[in-house]
Amino acid sequence: MLKMIRERVKERCDETILCPPCLVSFINPYSYLQLRKNQNWLKGIDTLFIDGVAMVWLFRLVGFGPVERVSFDSTSLAPLVFDAIEHDNKSIFFVGAREGEVERATNHWKNSWPNMRVIGARNGYFCSADERDSFLDELVVINPDVIVVGMGAVLQEKFLSDLYMKSWRGMGFTCGGYIHQTALFGINYYPKLIDRYNLRWLYRIIREPKLISRYLISYPLFLVLFMVDLLKYKLCVRK
Image 1 (tube, rainbow, N blue to C red):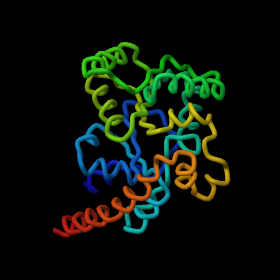
Image 2: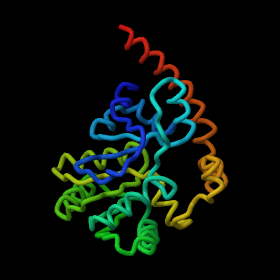
Image 3: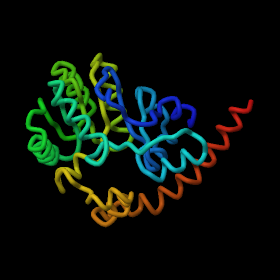
Image 4: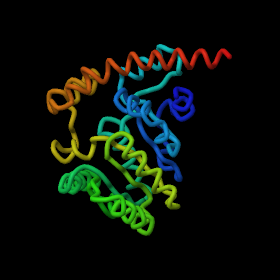
């Protein structure tokens, strides 16, 4: 599994952000655990970034290169993508969060990037597989240049991969809870000092207590399983 991740990990984002066709996702300790359960969701993803400073330090410690933290949020990649969309006059479509949340978040982004061509937004919930499939077909017809999907790990990657299989050839980004966060708290979710000192995880627990179990249970479990996977990886490399 680590071999699959290393093949897709990009060390840092650069100026060439919009280079379709390309599907981009982000891996953190929580999504790593989901990946171990179902490795197929990575097959359609072209580029991975490491999301979270703790995981960056761990990757550097075990010799996986000088990776940097890149997230699709307002402290990292999102403003660069939105700037590029404005500059290149590209179109963008947002999918994710609940009904009403994606609309509020989109309004926040439109206020900050008034020349960004937003051609649609939809919540990330579907009543049936048929409804989801029909919407994928609709997106192919609409054909946005960029799609940002926030449905949570696995679901969002599978959505973009399925869209690609239907012959859409734009630029796709997963964004986790970014749509939800922006809808509730606006563009600047993290205060500057919190971001500067890499205390985003603590700030999220304070603002969203439901995430406590993720940080206190899932993250220690990730560390154990990552070391197990690293040992397997090292043994395979030596053969």
